[in-house]
Length: 321
Image (cartoon, rainbow, N blue to C red; front, side):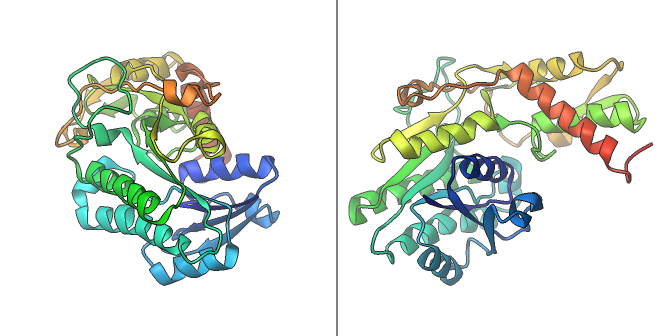
């Protein structure tokens, strides 16, 4: 099986590459950034092509040359806050990047399966605290949400018009060891590790702690993506979520419980979003019917993430005491 992964240098790209290699797949990854996991490349376990997802000619040539069986399209501007700061780039990368992938597939005699990764942000502000099903209307309002809704409709267009097998997810928050500090769980863990190992002031700066989110471990996420491609239907979207919701305050308290330091919590208004969705919890019943189930609970995920940052500072002489 030949797999192409866009955005391979990102958080999910690493875990997906590793899992697919372990299953005996040939993997080619593309990204505009060099991947941090040079071990997989050095051992020739994956191929890597440096390429911008908005470069339509380059994308088309890679797909024609590699002729993948499956494409996991992960490349995206994935931060809601960044989407407000640079709307144009968000639309270019998230919409036209997907267009470049889908359009390029038409050049192959045998078209590959394509997974388009969407987001729970597409649902927008929901009034219910019940688990959101895939039948919920899409009312996303942030630039990021708008780009992902548009990506979905692009996928539907290529299914109906060209007969491509385009699978769609609406992925809720996911986290785990190695995630960027731009995301809340990793940010908290990083700050605790710095307090413990770098003698930083015992203060954590936070944004809004009252919002609730459905968090899933990245390792469960990649297994969900693979099972959707193996057993799913390209005629309907799939929520990828835990079906549990935690307040950001609960997340912080779990992380703090793993440290013996006394840490003060300080609110920083610059960390608040322009418009906040107060509550999100997804239904994963459609995904579970495919045979998927999560292996990691939130406590294990957060401990693994904290230990990732602890090891980062212990092993990096630049930061060592």
